[in-house]
Length: 283
Image 1 (cartoon, one colour):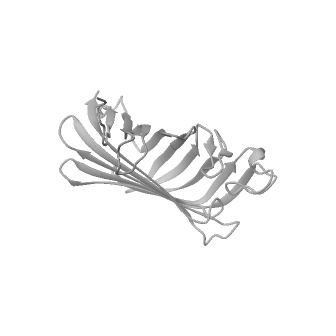
Image 2 (cartoon, rainbow, N blue to C red):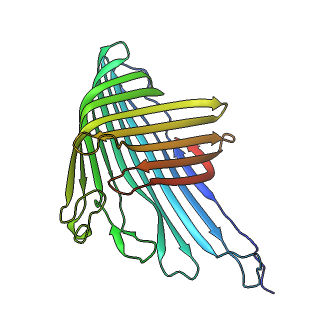
């Protein structure tokens, strides 16, 4: 007799954490740490199952890596983020993309006074794979379409490694898409017939990490941008929340949430959420 499988959900995450900071040595100013996660989930139902449900399989990969420099009166923080996920539902020929993100952040500062630094920042965001419309399956994006760049000088207030705010009152922003996405209309804020959009405005970026209790930490990242050239009152924002809960020496649970608002791209708030339970391994 066939084995009846009512509901099978298998979640496996492998986290590689390189949390060894560079020794406090004047000749070694770099600090490096990173996190790699791999999440698999699967649900299966046989034909006799009356509770409803569709068999599916999904996988998500994530990479976060920081490499920061601090020596004398200079700080330079760099962060690399990569995320990718796929899902396959039984009966649907298409494999759906559930996550796709490539992001690089760089923030340089030279001490001015107290916790204040003269600063310059750079941010790059794009995706790695083709994106399809859920309704009709048409291609609506792919690698470097869209691609976002932000850069500009400013002032950085940095209390410590867990709390900082960067103000950039003269920040440039550029959006690039392939012109086949704008052939019949605007796409990602780029006008019909164009392949790029330039903005000039003000940017505020903030980072805050707090340990709410033993083995539970919350990281918050927020970027605000106002375009002086077009409806400056409509402020774009990108908020990222990451909760890490260490169950014991080897097990941890992670919750990641991202909320994006850009009225040139879509009249609404984009929200994505991911939960992972897995094993920690330190190098």
